[in-house]
Length: 595
Image (cartoon, rainbow, N blue to C red):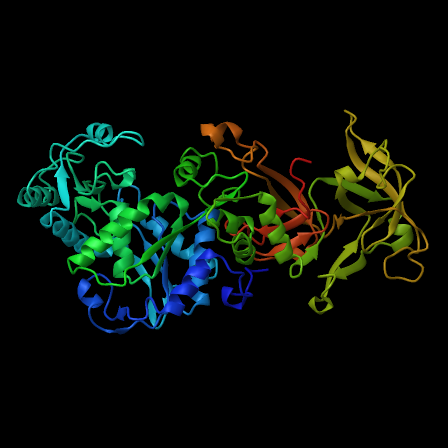
């Protein structure tokens, strides 16, 4: 089965939350009705002319291209794109690429791919709304010079340690920089020297001039430009100074005519600077009203994962995992390869709502959403993960020398999906734990003298087992009980308590099975500053050689299936080949973590 074909547009209306209420309020009040529309973003002239914006609301998803998107980003993606869809607007995909030392084109491409994979699109009103912060570097530079000319920014040549010490803390006001009193002309000349590469990296920064005694430390003259000689993925070596994220982001929002700038709670303390900067630029005629407003919501945290891109990159770089798309990773690329569907991820994100507090969800919530999505639609099959031979010693007496055909529904609740075909033979594969020479209490599967049904096949009676020289069991022996083949008259005359799955040795498809589990053993791997590498789960990946029924021969990559008794699996999108199949376990039939 390929990825779920339903699109976000087909999903049911979502329950209200405080963000939806804000959008509804602004639409009712006509807050943004007169936003001009025309030309491309990036120049103030386009804010003063043009027709009203056809989009009722504009939102944006603004990732930094310094890593792969993870499950936490899915929440923001679904929230922003979903609100835009529901209110007749558009959501921009914008790359906040202001830090060239950590950003790569690989990450840009991967982010675009994952937003599309989740089911969203940034095309609207006949225009692709794909933007880069670096598209606005010229405007940002002009805006910085404007602030300098108005005495609202200055070049500071203190060291980083001096700036940190003079910033103060929550109980102590900051101390003015000795460079704070420079004239606008002096600051402008110094800033242009920074731009022209006349000073070393880190030698000085441009700071906004606000209030060193502000109780909000973010308003104590925040840095807005720094010197960095680094080749940029988009602008090459044009610039050796780059804007800080907190300076660039509000400008990007304004130039793109964003109405509601939705971000996570850690940016709440930055909102006063967001508003300060946009108002100052509007006062100077560089931007026009109405200006964007920032709103914060609680981020989505999932137990047993980490979502710090720095830490995820460490896992990749130090080869604790096999890449950003390792199926154990909480990246969307990893989750896709693991077999999670976009619909299940969207449901988890939507069901978690939007609130002013951070949300913790147990990992089982994702697995429940995944099982709910897959159960109604994926084909069933039998597989043996820990193979043990079963020899039917009287097979020839019952069925002769041929293979006895059997069949089963592709899906038990969808007869229109047809039947799958396989066959019995004298040699089968069964699960090793379906046999016990000395059975524990309540064990109803194979043990000497007990009868079980081979699912979709026949009833067999266990007669014993074979062992090697070391006493290890190498095969189980049994006899077929005549006239018990499933679907034939009288087949149920023999009552048994146990039913086991199997595959015929003659038509089984040899398969590599990758059994994935949670990457960490602790629900909050880095809680309290703990070294998360110390709680890596050594059993997070187990590779076994097993067998699957012949209905899966030749299955293409990214085929999902439910292996009866074992759970949901997918053929690996990278390593699987028709002649060398590889199945990844997505999730079990029920949550068994810690049991």
